[in-house]
Image (tube, rainbow, N blue to C red; front, side, top):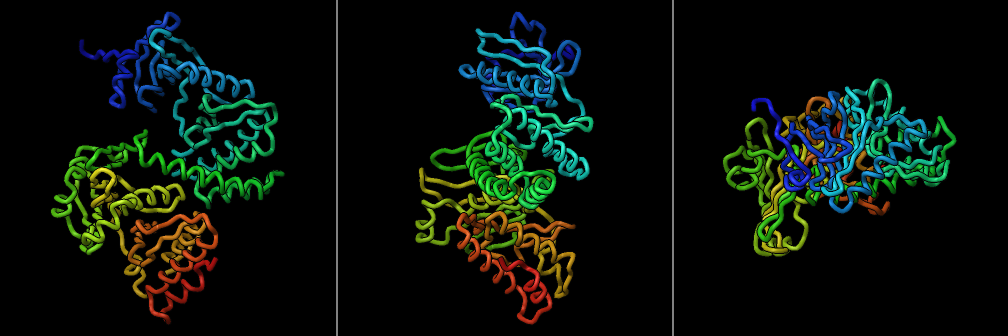
Length: 468
């Protein structure tokens, strides 16, 4: 019948995996919830486990969380319900539970809450500075109330807080752990540090200074925990970037390894990854060297840069075959920079040819950013508006514990008001302060070598780049 939505069941959802598209009708088959749910928009899907979606139920818009992991659904359902109830009992704003039901024979349960219209996560507010600042301030105050009530939010990323109608809401009940009130100082400090670690170092340290001025919190202990949480966050995210997950699609077999961002994974990109050499040959060469070949490739709707890391000879192939590819380094480093709030072209995919465990030629694909190399942009003139972002970049790399490894001015691209860092395969993360200092000084010296000794540009940079 025209206009009818397809109907799905719990077994069908399990079988669909990630290939699930809305809208559709869901029949839970529970005596306590006989009404079907009309799924309108999928917010999050963990294949075979959980579905979070906007739905229509009894004539109103609601948010549903469906738990359908055969062996763990009851545990997660009960934790979600208990967590939301604990938040509400403590006076913490959270969506109200409207209904919940279970189908034991299907090994599934659903929890239905009110739907917050026109709500935005903290991450979505980043481009509206006034609302973002207000939402973060409200979130910090909320965390203080949660800690006073003995509640710990274990999955404290910006996506788990919603800003709606000038009010902040905590939305992930599954991650709420109750403790005797109030939360211990050590636990509260660690939890607050975990929240601050979700933001770039410059922003998190500004928030830390604000907290220190407004409260009696131990800033030194919080900073120490912040560094630990930031490192732990990167290590966890790094593992996700190399496996199949919500953000990344990975494929691996005897002949290749592929990782591609799901938000970029379309037919044109898949065709490029199936035969990258053909697209490089047909594209506009940006670099054709012994160690790498770089081409600008036009795809329907977007332009991308494809970088092939060449294996120069048999000795080079043997030296690289058991080591992580330079494409893999670029892929991981680009995502690391994004976590730190440092601009680099958006990574889209990387691809390694393999023979079992042995790696061969590797490819890295990123979005194309039209811009001008810093060396050409300055045109032998001191232009502070262009040069100050370089000083900030060096500071942010230091704070992030990173060295670039090839700090040529041609690896810095100016596009509109943004400075982009390119060529990331030599970038390294340092956990030892002495090694970081040594690598930083090497980056600084290499960068200054882009201009003659007596150049006004070199003198300005030498006077203004941090010496650490």
